[in-house]
Length: 235
Image 1 (spheres, rainbow, N blue to C red):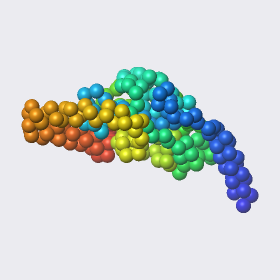
Image 2: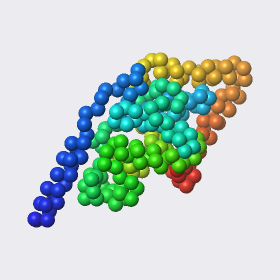
Image 3: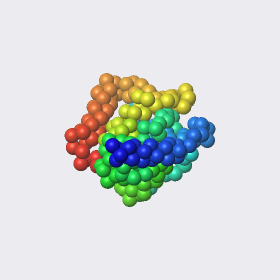
Image 4: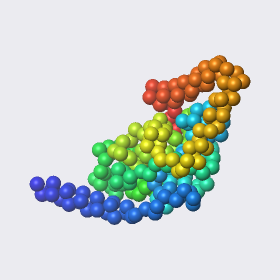
């Protein structure tokens, strides 16, 4: 009983120290491109014109600075690669595990989380992932910006999970993300609509078949690579 009591006291002390570090965040300010603790998304040239659900993703520090993996051995800082963000999703730091030591884990993974690379703050996780991806080769189909964000979430053990992957990141921001404004919606879907209408007028129904086939192949690659042949998309 004494040992259990001592452990409870130590756990409470560790938790209070962790909570103390979660200082209030500044507000989201799209005009200044500041999105504290957010995932952000913007459409990609050409690719999003054919498949509007695919785009470029970044993750932001506590002060709102944007980080995005935008090229081999390069993580862009405070300059979102493909223009202003169109969607954002602010994540809850309370759902992260910030252990000061092995006994201080608030997640169920413990040793696995430690071996993967734990972080004691939000920014610490992003910095560790940045150092890792500064030695990674960028590939749209295997190791991309979504992989970078997923690695950050795994280091944070966000939501108690260490199984974040690029599909999870895409689904999270696609279904829960908020549009910046109505202009962002037009920016995201107008090119696709224009290509679709032009294709139907100039080519006809075969264009729709080709576009649908392209979408299925793209989705199939990411789904199979992520869940069936994980080695294909290991980054």
